[in-house]
Each structure stands twice: as structure tokens, then as C-alpha cells.
Image (cartoon, rainbow, N blue to C red; front, side, top):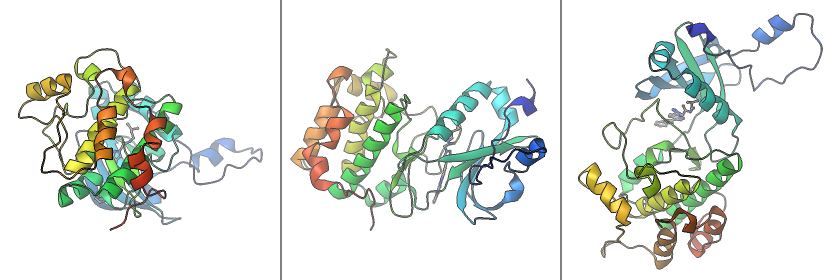
Length: 302
Ligand code: N15
């Protein structure tokens, strides 16, 4: 396959589409496509196997974005052409305040550029490491945002977003954004070495059984625990031990931790082995812990 066939650049989203019939349609359209000339490039935000992410500013609007650069050679080497295309189509069709936007894309001879939403406050993971754990208000606010984002995704038939703390970003108001780094980019503060971690995976996933949207509900339980205690619930020395702990649902709250009874209750309703018995996203939003603690604006400051 040729590298130029990988994809056609998407036409600009921020410019209004003119309806007027145009004789020079071809030229008109090509003049609306994004190119590297449209951006000032700033500091690197992260790097991974297939490329890097840079802070960038669209020259005309001065709008800040995260520009992700992917090398076509790498995509072709690993046969990821179709997967990338699919993921780009999915991601650009999603529009929710808690899902990081993919505004558009373009390419040149060697590279594909993804124009992504810039999250000013960076990774939630960093905030979590900095303070050890989050307050019940912060945790409930992020958790409610995450639940709403997942409900939206499930409604669009998108399941299994790779939700881990390092895939969660914060905008300037502390609003949570799910950013699916997927297979292509690792964030800066890497959590575990390569291969990925089992920590966030539901029993049916680690066992390689059929799974559906309920895997995300399990992951919500894992994240809720980690937000409040600073470590994921099934953490262990080895992958094998984590695997065993997940399969047994070996869940405990250290006596030294100060977690409210309501939070524990919610976690217990999500970390359920039988995927059909996990609390639904709709019921999560009505849980007393959320009602009492989550900030309805979805923003977090401190
Ligand atoms: C396969 C493809 C179509 C999926 C498209 N989605 C992604 O590529 C997901 N992705 C998002 N990959 C990288 C990013 C990404 C977006 C990484 C970092 C940031 C980002 N937006 N904002 C940041 C960001 N802001 C920061 C602030 C301080 C420190 C680091 C920061 N990184």
C-alpha cells in the first residue's frame, strides 16, 4: 500500500462550509484543508512509539491544540492503517465535554498529523501522584464526569475506551477529558513498563472471554478506588498475582484509609465478577456518594 493512500486530509472544521455552488470546487476545497503552515509549534507534551504530541497554536484563531505526529512508515510497518483510520473516524465523531476532541487531521509525505484538544492541566495521573489520593469531592466529580462520558460513548456504540488514569486529562477548569492514547502514544509519566497493565481490566477481559460494555463499569470501580486510595485495588508484585486477585475479586480497604461508607458501597457494587450484576451507569449517577459529593459543574479547582 502506498503511503499517500493512507488517508485524505479532512477539510477544516472551524471554517463554515459554504453552500454556494462553485466552479472551482476542487481548488476551494483544497484551500480549506489543514496543513502544518496553519500552526505554530510549541513544547512537546508527550512521546510514544509512533510519534510525538506537541503543543501548537492555530495561527488565525490563536486556538491552542495538541498536535500529534504519527509516522506513516510505522503505521505501515505494523499494518495499522485500517485501525488508525477507524479510530480517527470514531474519535472525530464523538463530541462530549468529557471526551477529548479530535478536531481534524492532515498529512504530508511522511507524517500524519492529528489535531487534538489541548488539556491545559495535563494528566489527572500527575495530580493523583502529587497528592497521593483525591478528596471525596474531587474523586466524585471526576468519577461522575467519567460516568457521563462513558454513557455517551455507549450510546454511540463505542465501548472499551482504554480508561486508565494516564488516559485522563484535565482542562483549565479541571474538567476531566477521556483521551484515548490507545496503542500509539504513551504519556509522559508512564505508570508501568510497557506491555500494559492488567490492573484496570475486568475478569472477563483478563480471562479473554467475550465481553461487552460492562467492562467499562468494572474499570470505573477500579478508578474510583484508585482516586480515593492512590493505588489500584488489585495491585501486586507480578502480573500473575494481579490476575489472581482480579479473578478472586480480592478487594479490601486498608484500615488506615479514610474512605466513606458510601464510596465503599459504590465500589463494591461495581467490582462484581458477574458482569450482568454490576451497577449500571444510570444507577451510578443516582448513587448517594455521587449525589452528595460530585460538583454539578464537573469542574475541580484547587
Ligand atoms: C488513533 C487516534 C485516531 C486516536 C486519537 N486520539 C489520540 O491520539 C489520543 N491522544 C491524545 N494521543 C495523545 C493525546 C494527547 C492529547 C496527549 C497529551 C495532551 C493532549 N491534549 N493535551 C495534552 C496535554 N496537555 C498537557 C499539559 C501539561 C502537561 C502535559 C500535557 N499534555
